[in-house]
Length: 156
Image (cartoon, rainbow, N blue to C red; front, side, top):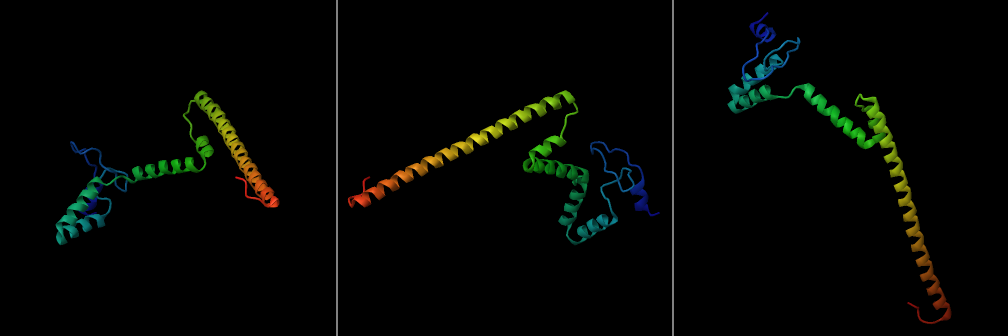
């Protein structure tokens, strides 16, 4: 066992003002570094170009936990699912309160029915407007043909 391994595996007391420490591979609390290559990379960076070493030290000290990134990814995936398939996303989420979940499901179903009715009305209105355009075009065409047959000027 090397000194670095012993230090990394040793339990670490909370440092005042530093917050919680991350856990190492063994599940125990450890320092900033997760692997030996991180220490080597920082030492090499300090030797070659000290600002790069300082940047690596800052990154190792304040990098986010993977659990935070994973949770962010999961919530983003839930939002994307809600955009693609709203009904499916609603079914997977629940508050745990069965009465509220039933009430919410009832209200959402009523809103969905209202949305379907509005879409149907919108389609009916679009069809009505299209039919008016056709009638207007047909009337204009009939006037044109009548005036052409009469050999006179185009009425307008």
